[in-house]
Every structure is written in structure tokens, then in C-alpha cells.
Image (cartoon, helix red, strand yellow):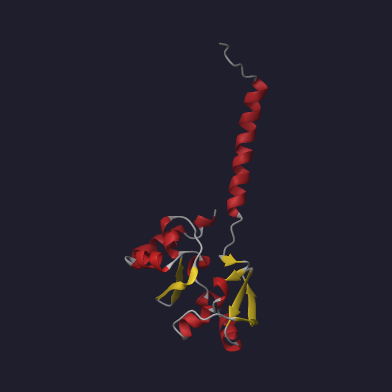
Length: 155
């Protein structure tokens, strides 16, 4: 049985290549968009203003859209579109529309329009209604954790 030999060149290549590979992996993760979107559409086409006005997810139409923060937003009416554009940060979901429970746990996950909650004038979305119920067990604690993790979880 022979002992494998390692050349200086092989060690040097490994030492140089490892950080380069790691930087590519980090760069790829850093490319995650600041707003969760499904085919570049925020909240899967639900109108963010409707949550506040109608108290329910209402789907927008292609007739009433706006581009904001690199994402297309749909609205149920021209009024809702104008309201959003006057102050988008007041209506856009927290944590870039990523799952509030996931962000509180230190990672990101997709969301569905039906799993939502407005807390102190801010819209939070979750992966599913089941996950939303888990998040709701400690809303203040989960918001505190989410705020501490956001936007670092995108890195």
C-alpha cells in the first residue's frame, strides 16, 4: 500500500481555490432579491394597499401596475396604485415580502397572499396559514427577531 504524495503545487492550488469558491457561493446568495417575487411580481399579484383598506388579500390587474424597488406590483384600482406610489414603504410587506417566520428564524422562504397580518401598521406575510399560526404565537418576539435578522438573511 503506497502513501499518496501531495505536491506543493497541489496544496497551493487548494489554498488559493477554496476562498475563490467560497466567494462565488457567497456572491450567489447575496444576489437574492431584496423583495420576494414570483416571476418578478410582488405578493403573487395581490394588491398591498387592499390589505389595509379592505382587510383582505385582493388580486390586482395588469391594468393597474407599478414598478417599485425592482419588482412589479399589481393593484385592484388606480386609487390603490396612487396610494402605494405616494408612500410605498408604508404598504409594502415587511422583510421584502419574505416569510416573517422564516426571517425570524434566520433564513428566507416564499409567501402566499392568504397568510398575512397587519401589526402596528405594518404588513407581514408568511409561507402558509399553518406557519402564520406558528408566527402568531409570539408576534412581538418574532418581529423583534425578524428585525434583528433583516436584511442580513439576504447575504
